Length: 588
Ligand SMILES: *[C@@H]1O[C@H](CO)[C@@H](O)[C@H](O)[C@H]1NC(C)=O
Ligand SMILES: *[C@@H]1O[C@H](CO)[C@@H](O)[C@H](O)[C@H]1NC(C)=O
Ligand SMILES: *[C@@H]1O[C@H](CO)[C@@H](O)[C@H](O)[C@H]1NC(C)=O
Ligand SMILES: *[C@@H]1O[C@H](CO)[C@@H](O)[C@H](O)[C@H]1NC(C)=O
Ligand SMILES: *[C@@H]1O[C@H](CO)[C@@H](O)[C@H](O)[C@H]1NC(C)=O
Image (cartoon, rainbow, N blue to C red; front, side, top):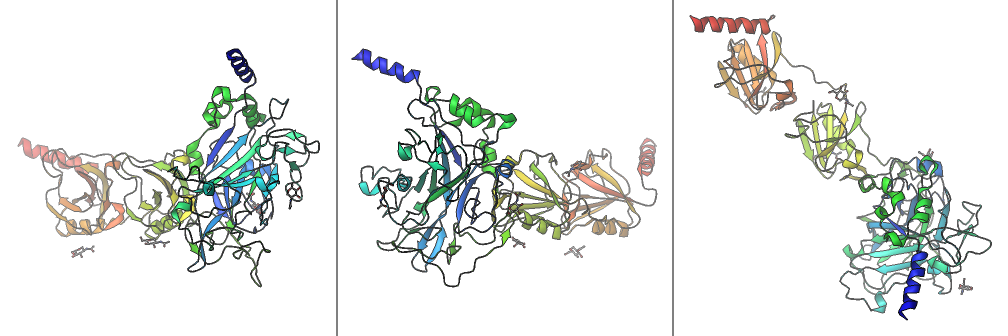
């Protein structure tokens, strides 16, 4: 008996099961595009889309692999994966609210048939639409009907053995506190020839094992591919559940049953240096090396794993110019999609005319400004201190416009809703860029672009926007100076004001007959005819505080003065002459 058990273990070890891989994504975008079903134009209903950032209304394998980033944690997977967006229906005002997708898992499940040792990666650009948005019923003997299912997430475990909470093929009759998981199994037998077909499905078939992808492929579709499987997790727990008889969840096409759930897939794996990394992973990684869905346990993927880049990834191409309703109410589902309850034909709006306009995913940056990139905050204070605001209206464009209106050449957005402006980078900050993945926080008013990160800024600069020099006639700038060894550098007269400007300080010193002037700590003005002992030139970067009354200009720093001297030849020569005089005076 024991011998038999050992023998079967040995057999298991000799033929290890191929490992599966899970790619966990944040959502890339939510828009009414579908390059498989309605290429080049607006799609029938709203989709949640993950994968390569170059997703567009027309998409090819070549355009996909040119994506700047991907929401997949493996940077070479530029595939796109999408499903209909789910909405909460509010019967009190018949409105719809898009239920945010918490995250998406896309699985690659190698399920070789008898006598096979492995399966094939999907061919480049393979397209599949699985499921049927028009289906209203469930046929338990149909693999296609079985391919779509739902899981009600309840981490409390309170309903573990309750059949009303078990996985099913339509919506539940109660809420799902930790989310509704919508699932699609894709057919994995390929005809070996066509990357697509008129119904986007006939070039694929189920193996004998059905929706779980195993068994043998039919002779018409002989190529056994790795099986793709989706889990889209919707945050249903944050929305109410309506009384029995009133729909709560509605897919973007109006479907209130859930049977119309479907998934779209376009294969867009890059092959760096001609190497099919996905195939290497399918062939080379197995349960014996403890893969268990974890990418880092599969060596071919390791050089390409980058979770930070996946979180920071945003769309590159135009979206449909309409409100997708995610997280807030909209009066109608976008497109011709009235609420569709029951088994009758799909209703439509009388005289419906669709939109056909598109909008950039990013805000408009004022002319003259360009993005330097992501930079780190200053080491001893903020990089930009001239002016700032924080507001939920933040986009990159809103910040740059605000700084531009105030005359600043530099604008930086940080932490999603903060905007900083200045004439220079201060406090140890520089325009040396760091990886864009460090600036990964979505703008408060535009989920499709990033507004910096934690202590990082998306920096914009307009070199033409140099503030004019407001130094009054007769005065010459003499640089940044330290305070004296004992006491002040300039001791003739001083005042402080919350409206300090260069002009205000210099006019005052001139009126009082002084030939030297300096401003310090944003709001202090000092006049004199000579510098006290120990007051010496300091690095220009030490004078780093904007004037309290004119934040386009610098008024000294901490124990540092921005200085001027009056008279045409005011210069080092004057200063050394004065020092000589001072020394002569002391020596006498
Ligand atoms: C996106 O699709 C539009 C419409 O088909 C096309 O004109 C445009 O060139 C595409 N953009 C990219 C970057 O592929
Ligand atoms: C249910 O599906 C099976 C398998 O595809 C099919 O043979 C049968 O005709 C279907 N039944 C109905 C009522 O459509
Ligand atoms: C954003 O809000 C700020 C005030 O916090 C305001 O000054 C600015 O004009 C607003 N910008 C836009 C684009 O609404
Ligand atoms: C970065 O700063 C350096 C020196 O301050 C400057 O020469 C360069 O043009 C700046 N680059 C950008 C992109 O702003
Ligand atoms: C600054 O404020 C003072 C006191 O309120 C006022 O007298 C002075 O004119 C102001 N100066 C400027 C330049 O606005």
